Each structure stands twice: as structure tokens, then as C-alpha cells.
Image (cartoon, rainbow, N blue to C red; front, top):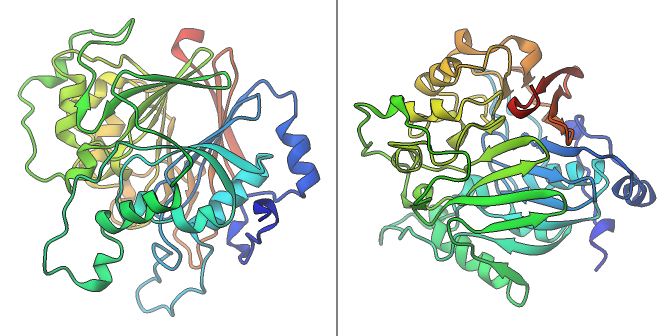
Length: 378
């Protein structure tokens, strides 16, 4: 099967990406760019973030929703929107736009349907070489689960995943393990509900925001605790991508001392839902923050206020979607990839990082961009 020849179009909804011919893809992958390229892909409140190193090596973190699920919702009283591109289609379009004909590494942070549902469809559309996850599924569906929901339970998705990757390179890291992908360095800071036991080099400062913070009973399911959470270092820039790591695991990771240290780019955990973004996350002190929310999923009031309280955030709060519930907390429109419109055009946020620590974020809806400097480059 020629994965690169599989069709991935089917929607003007991929307007945010420039689709390349196979020859152009190969040329782009072999280009001499020294920058790390990142695409925060709009999968409607699911999660899919693609990284491409200067060497043309790639990492995808999560695969969004299954086909037919997670698309834009109509405005009240409006007719249903036309069918939109699937999460897998959007991921493949992003990969091709960045010059890829395959994906080297896939991290499935956990097995919830909004993070892993697009996996099977993606496997049919593009080759993937290496698979990383936290190990066995941690959630058991209730015995009387509706069959329609059972098809998207973590148990079903995990079992299907194991069948699809049988015989392929499958990695289950331990907390503290590292992995180099081209010139990008990964450190796994929490895996399977086990956070770092000791601070990373240069980390370990006391965290004043731990005082009085209580554990939370709500967690969205055990799989959130088990999320593969990764610190990515490229040149002078540190990037945090923690999947759906729960409030309680954040506290373990960041209290009483911050075991990760400050970061430069932070993909807001749990889409900005109020079962993460605990007060101790202020210690991450990101220069640039990207929230992978949907129009009505994520972007909850407390996390929005928490992000706004980060010391360095200022005008560096970027969102994949305008928040329809708390618009007063949104950044200005230039920093939002998708405004409230039907149909949704699925614009991504693109990030380019130089080895020297220049971080440029571009909104593909209007090509507005802004450049920041990693703290070690200032």
C-alpha cells in the first residue's frame, strides 16, 4: 500500500494547510531549515500536535476523534453544518504541508476517544513507524454500558490499537526516560500516574502556589492520570505537552517543588477544562501558551483565568477556538485560530522555533504572527 497516495482531501475545511505534491513533500522534508516546526491542529476540542525537526524527523502527539465525531456544532437554530474533514484527514494534511510522507513517532498520551479516536483512520492514510503509550488501559467500562458508547470506550480503543500495532515498534517509557528525535530531546515527566521523583537539572525551586491547594475528586477518568506527559527541549526552548494530566497529578509533579522547571511553550493541559490547570501550574511560567480547545469544549472559566494569571503570559495566550461561553476571557481575535462561524474552517496554529530560542506563532486564519524569545535566549 502506498500511504502517501491515499486521498486526504474532501473538504475546503483544510483551508489552513498548503497541500503539496509528493515530490514537493520530499523536497520540503529534506530542506535545510534549522527550525523546529509545530502544528497545533484543530480537531474540535480533541488533541493532535505535530512536530517536525530540522532533520525531517517527526512526532505526533495524539490523533483526535474518530471520523464522524467531534465536528463543529451548528449555532442555535442553524441547519447542521456540512460534513467536515476527519481528525485523521487534518493530521495528514498538516503532515504533507510540512513535507512529511510518513510519521516517525506517535505518542498516544492516553486512550480517551478525543485523543485516540482518530488512530485507526490515520493508520489507513499515512505510515507510522514507532508507537509510544503508557501501557495497559486503566479504565474499565461499566457492565451495562450502552453499545454505542462501548465502541468508543478506552477498553475498546486500546484493544483495537494493540491489534493494529502488532509487530511494529512499540515503546512504553518509564517516568524519567528520555528519547531523542532528530535534534529534539524528550523527557517523560509523568507516565501511568507516576510523576518525576526528583527534579530535572535546573528545576526544584519551591512552589508558593502549592499552599492550601487540595486534591480534586473529579478527574474525568483514570486514563487522565495515566497521560504520557512530555517535556520537549529544542535548542534553547523548553516545551511542555502533558496530554490530559489531571489536577492531582499536576500537584504531585509541581509540589512542594517544581520538578519540571519553567517552560517557554505550554500546551494547556486538558483543553483548558477545570479538572486540570491547578494553581501550582503557575510555576511553569510559560512565555507562550496554546490552548487546544473547541468552541464549546475546554476553555472553562477557572482555567482561562488561571492562564491569564501566568506571570509572563501578557499577549502570548493563543487559542484554537473562540470560547463561546466566556468570550470576555478570550484573547483578542488575532490570537484565536477559529472564530465562531459555521462551517468551521479548521485553521491551525503554527509554531516555528529556532535553535537560538526565537518562537514565532502564526495564526493561519489571517497569517497574523508574533515572535517571542525563550527565557534562556533573553
